[in-house]
Length: 364
Image (cartoon, rainbow, N blue to C red; front, top):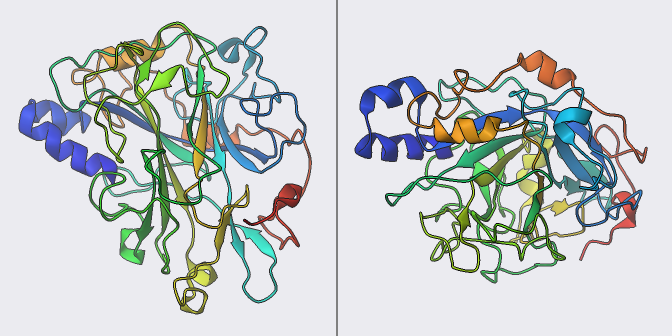
């Protein structure tokens, strides 16, 4: 799991006793349970109901089909959040993965599952994903500035079908059954991970990672492509993890957001008969059978200065899974209970087989 490597790195350069208590001093890590699974995308397709493809969404229950920054205030309008920290009513969403039956061509949604904790137990969550907010792991200047309300961005490119290097920080990790809880070893998007879907059975699940840019122009809350107002740090390479530098065009260093999505590909989804001659049976909800097009959407929604206080306290009163001295935490059951009815009701294929991908998306 990613934090395992970061703890080791942090221990080499920072106070060991602090790490023993806080885990790692350069990031905040927490689970968010499933809010809703539906075809909406207020970032790319605002106002379109339903949107073209299926998404899995977590966070504040003020999530709607437009999320217009002129009239949306997630901390005030959300009555609950599916994330463990109550001050976080942000929304985080990604595409769903479907299993396409080689026998008859029908589709079934691959469920998400809880990620692991530092102590080897599972986070108390239902589906959803794990969120990281990170400051630079290298360099001397670790200060980050939290963006303003209304900020949003996108990472990845749903049109990619080959590895082009244009989408850093997008990868998949195939887990053995023994790695189900701890998620394997090594940094995300390292040599053992692939931008494409694994071409072998993954009985412990597939961990998908999405790493967002860490540099902002400091002015625009969004841009027409939802990317141009942000940038990856210089020299990040395919891994996407930030240094303490930002380009002159995007001089403001913001907390780097990362998602870990754990897909439960155990049981029949890992039958060896489906993985022959380099073929594999998985497809993203937007019709991508390669995995290269994985992407994530982010909409900032922290209450007041809570996230800034958390980032500023990293290494002293906040780190990894323990920021309870700074941030308010809720019971896992309460985060799990925060759900929302579909705005575009339909069968998403969780318990039944679908004749086609939701929205009639073609696999190509």
